[in-house]
Amino acid sequence: MAAKPTKIAAVRGMKDLLPPESDLWRFMEEAARLTFGTYGYREIRTPVLERTELFARAMGATTDVVQKEMYTFTDRAGDSLTLRPEATAGVCRAFIEQGLYSQGQFKFFTLGPMFRHERPQKGRFRQFTQFNVEALGFAEPMIDAEQIVMLAQLLDRLGVANVEIHLNSLGDDQCRPQYKAALIVYLEQHGARLCDDCRRRMRENPLRVLDCKAEGCKQIAEQAPTISAHWCDDCRAHFEEVQEFLEAAGVKYTVDPRLVRGLDYYTRTTFEALAGDLGAQNAVAGGGRYDNLIKELGGPDTPATGFAVGVDRLSLLIDAKRFGQSGPDLFFVAVGPQARRRAFAEVVVLREGGLWVEMSSADTGLNSQLKRANKLGAARVVFRMEDELDRGVITFKDMDTGHQEEVLAPSLGSMKNLDPVLWSNAYCAEMVLMRSLFDDAVNDPSAFEQKAKRLDNPMGKRMKIDHQD
Ligand SMILES: [Zn+2]
Ligand SMILES: [Zn+2]
Image (cartoon, protein in one colour):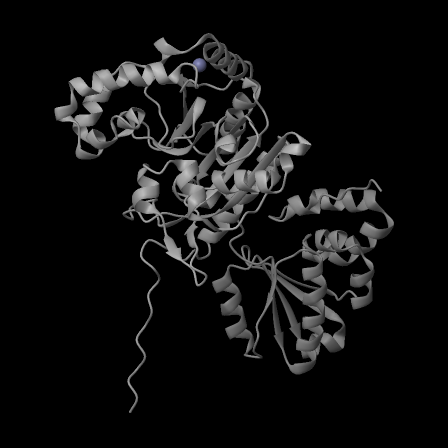
């Protein structure tokens, strides 16, 4: 006897997204598309696989991400490739490679998976999802502020509570070198108490010490000199203008002189959005200006700014009950071959009208089909039985109230001739009025509205008919 094949598990740190959680993800994506779209951001989709060199140059060869966390492999042609650990480098690569800079400014967003070989924990996966926003070719502080406002608006739209925006400026090539030098002097005085990683990176990138999670390093970072004392006039003016625009838009923020970002490419404005239980908020989004990156990747000198939202963490902060449809609008209980064919035709038309309609795939009995409707959480059931077919009637049952009603069946032709939206509106109306509602919806819209007003049903919101043509 052959051995039973063993089961195959998913890769560690990578998860399956199942309904209803996948409904929440779609909801977040739709909110992101809507929000970014109103600010003029358009979608860009770049490959998940890029040449390893791109990330080494963009993120800095000495960063933890590049040194320890990338999924890198050699392909069959001998090229070193890496699954993208973040999105900005790929967007900039496309901007340069496609010659987009010759057309001036671009606002892009992208949604998708990123990959980092980190220790998995709550809200952190090795395949994780980000919403990314990049404005390329914009030097002005208004765009920095606009992105922060847009992020705050997205989080608000998603119902995320206790959002705090933290803001800092990391300076530029004019002023950051002096700050770095001052920071190195300070860190050297406390070198013995720094962790091994920080002692190693202290001279290459002392700013990253301020970001270290080790307890000793945190204490040293608390007393470290801050960059604000070293800003040049241009950086100071830029940062002040960002804040003026934020105040104009009524977005609250905290200037956090110790906020640095983990990647080498940030310049000037840098920000994070924290959210979650009060007092224990975690970063759900972060970003800032990266005016040197496109030049360093071989493109023309192009100022840019962007941010990323960590969608896995974000999903933990949203009340899943606030959105999504738990069950179908209608479930057709159809018994007998004739009735089932007729029901199938009606189901097809209703789905064309935008309703979620289910029908049992097997001609099991009435009771077993009703059970299935219940299990799926259907709002209403439509009965299609052979004897009703002969009598030209159709029976509806409201699953919440148990109310049941028999009405004249509409002809399939009349269903098809109606505008699908009108159709679904009328179909969801109170069942006893359905027949006359169909006629009114076509012939006398004001009579339809009057009747519709008398109806008190959970689908009432769908009955609003727009009479403008
Ligand atoms: Zn450290
Ligand atoms: Zn400066």
